[in-house]
Length: 329
Length: 301
Image (cartoon, rainbow over all chains, first blue to last red; front, side, top):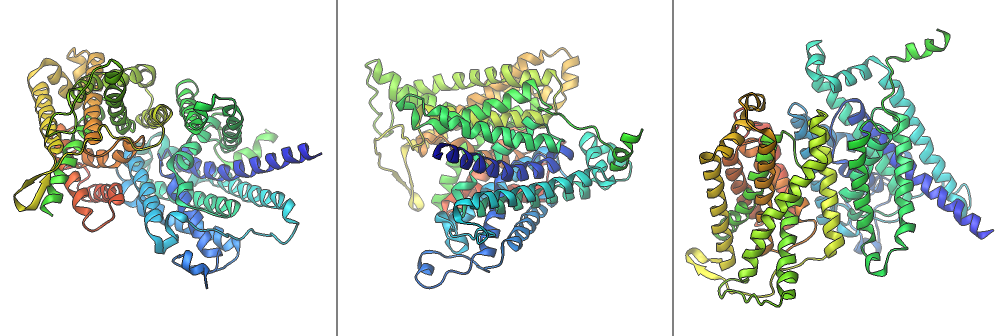
């Protein structure tokens, strides 16, 4: 049954991409959903994570290949090292952005993150020596590729993606039910009040920004090893930043289950619309991607106007201790 | 380098027109309007529509005026584009920002809505005109030679003159008219303005009309100087915000000074860096301002 096989392959790729986006959504949820930080530079952390993992896991090009590909370094290390390095470097960049901007008005963080994302994209595009300029890097290793035949590798990678997503989910859920998580939400609701209670709000905001960015960096690594080849074009702010915002706002900011649902729903809509645009008149087909972007923009406006809390809304939770006692009460 | 500084002043006057509009909206409506760059693009494409479609379709010929690369259709287009873009902005405010204000949504939510609006406007331009560069005119005009080896095209002198004229008119409007005074009062203290009987709805409409009208003019002037592209608004966003923050949010004079400083810095940087790094230069300058003087040069609050 070739048709059914195609459908399964399609669903596997859909779930893999949605899972990768889910990791980004969890990262943004730490920043925006719990702490109220307006990060519009997800594309930058995405790119940094993807390139870091690419350069950590691929070997330095040699021989004839080296004439076509230049990169700053190539370590040839295994995938988990790349994943962790991606999170580390993205977190470091967030630290550098956060220090000058988090003490200031909240909209300064937004414009600064746009700036850092644009600058990162320009650097990767123009600096040939760093990571091969506009042509990007290819030949990223596929983790655990030897386990099954290449035809079934999609399942293996899906399992890796889901494992990372679940691990991040569990870690955030625990963190958010801790005293640390309660301070974050206090800052989001009223930063002055949190400061009055003696909390160093700047440090907490910085921690949330860095943690969220590190998660985004790992998402970038997951994407890179799924695509196996990356170039600066992949980190267009439209795809990388905006889509993730729509997912988080649709699912419900401040709700980790919600943002994961948002990732699957929005990615499903996004890939589903490719089938719809096939029915457009030929004259419009070349511009179909822009019609889809228009739709995504309208979708976010509709959410903001009609249902700002998203599909699920925020979960009312205080402490994991109370949660554990609740069934007995 | 002298030539780069002159070009920087020309680019700076374009940035300043956009930044003055942005700072008015920022000061009076109190949110960061990320769609402002794309309002520039809307204005530029409205003029393209007039110059390359409406005028030829009506069977009129708009021969370029000798030293300039364009003729009367450009001026007509500009007079159409400024109010049209203003009305677009007022329409967006009615449909989107006003309901949010009435709900007392936080400024961050309005900023997010404006980001989505930027994407919507840009998508519409892509759908209408495609992703390629476009020029208003194919006419090539030789540059005039000035002392110190500076070459300036007549078009660029036109840009400077028109930008100066618009800034002058805006200054008179803000200083002399009742509405201008009401706008400045609202920017200073919105609650006080409300209790003194200022019609804030009218102030909001005028703010969008002026802000978006100036943005449209800036987009058109950039189109005359360089070329039109759907993502031009996005590329202007960082210089616009850098100029506004440099000048102090809500200060039109600050935005004018900030725009000129940004334009000169960006152009002079091309002597040492690739021109594609211009937005990054604006960003670095903005970070330096935030570290050294977060209120801006002319900022008070």
